[in-house]
Length: 363
Image (cartoon, rainbow, N blue to C red; front, side):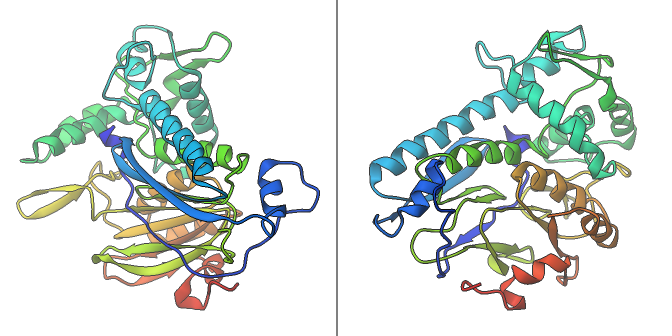
């Protein structure tokens, strides 16, 4: 699903610290694993797959033996493949009423849809207003115009074509009947695009499964979407997550120290095409209908990976000053901006997470 591969790769770094222990007496698999940590010997295992959301996904986990990791890794891979099919806007799968199917048919009348797709759209009905209009999954027709031109790679779409497509982007025209399990587009020309949220939303669902498994100490990196579970079971208290430098992507701009949190980056420097020596990336400003120009990247940290995905796109398409006000008004969400000149800005809560500000693996 090429549209969903829209977030920038975060580099996972493993850094030393003390392990936090779960609440005594807890009966969940996660708490039991932590309570037994001193008696068990945990090893680090890792695996990678590339069969979902057109991105490389890496899972690192601490388990008592290879078979425990293999079982959980297979679960993660299978869940990613399942949600990839459901949220895919470009391919049909036999027996799956996915996003492609809904986009093809919901303009003609109510159509049955997979429950997972309905659940995501209902989640967006609740969360999308938080984006202040910067993210609208009903702008699929306009984004498809950009996708088609980007695939050819030789020219820019005409503004008249973009405006005509953007006229069909009222999310309120998406009618969901939960009891019947159907979706209907009151505007028959509308298309949905879930590229700003589908991958992060999936990462969070998978993370919740792992937290209740016998491998709750993990980190998932799916392109630019990183989700940390419980602390690594090797004497550290937090995972290290590198933020790429947009001016030199082989280097880190900084390092975050996290546990139980997600970090998602949106940026202009990995997915783009070039016309007349100018790069045009994939994050489109809904006001100008052109790629956003406010910054090079923004990284959002919060617990829910789906929300982090949604808000990283939101903040990328706002001036950083406006984005800072939005972050300050949201509890439990922090952000780190890399501006066009390479300078950085960050919200106050980032001070306890960033290596450059004195955070360490021993906090």
